[in-house]
Length: 436
Image (tube, rainbow, N blue to C red; front, side, top):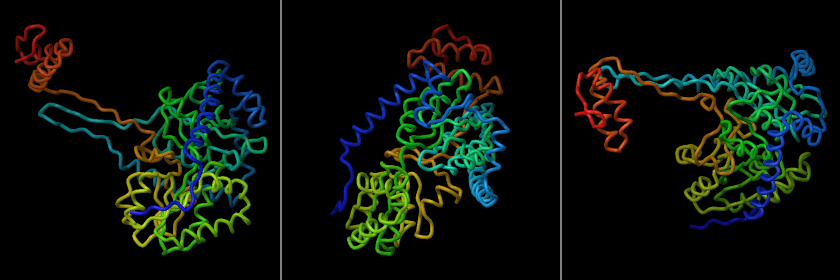
């Protein structure tokens, strides 16, 4: 077994040091929001976004004004994308059914899928206004039936971004705010004098947003840890260096810390891809960002076998995994840790990011080992219920329950069962003992 690292990124120790700095910054910011509320949000907005407003929530008139600035072509494209995303979300919702079953005569068990009652959807807009994130969070929450959907995005060039506001509104947001970064997720989760706290936070973001969600988890629910974008290309010699390099840089441009990994069985493809990346970085308009990500977080890994590639891919558990090999469906059948798969050269991560219909809010930092991405089911809570319809069933289940409670030493628990056995089973069970 031979796995060769043709290129590696920053050492783990350096990445951990970066994470520690982010943690400290976020902790202080969230404490400030908790202490000073709206005043803290105003100060942070001025400091980080150079944006000041009497109120961060947009009025209906402001929403309509923003939408009027969107071109007909852009509006049609937004609507097309939302149609695809809605169709897939509705199919997912239909797959989740309430259950009711009679497990014993007279014993009814069931569960209901109930929407979270309020959700805060964060839409990034720093270097790039992430219009598609509004579809992925707000629209999906709407399909799930969430009754209060709050959406927030940072200002772009000192004002609400027209296309983001349009996407939020068309997707079904009930409240739209112009707030970015830590102050946005903090205000939505903690609440302020003018912003009612939500029950759940969703949406991607930079390292500070992801860390804020991590620190707020427990106080509110979160979808997942969706930090800086990660991408992996698994390829063999069925594709060329241009295709692989384009797919790697297409995600590396997200930020300065976006890991991009090539995993291949072909030394020739690895070498060609590195050369092609060098060429593309001379002409890519976003090279100032992409080149830093590639320098610090890019990796090229050459394996002897497909089985080795599978093992490495599952260990890395990348957010996006583009598979371009002679056995794409084999990877589909055998991969278990990732955010989303993009199978074959005809599709790509950008399709998933913007338009094809699957959700682009996906697990990062190995979270794909234990969770999938954002989907309609994340906005639904599955709650169980039970009822007993007959005296006979009450006595039967109660007697067994009584004995099992006494087995564990829970006398008070046993008496809950015993009182039913006495009343509905007409049995004389001495207090504090197990039923016969």
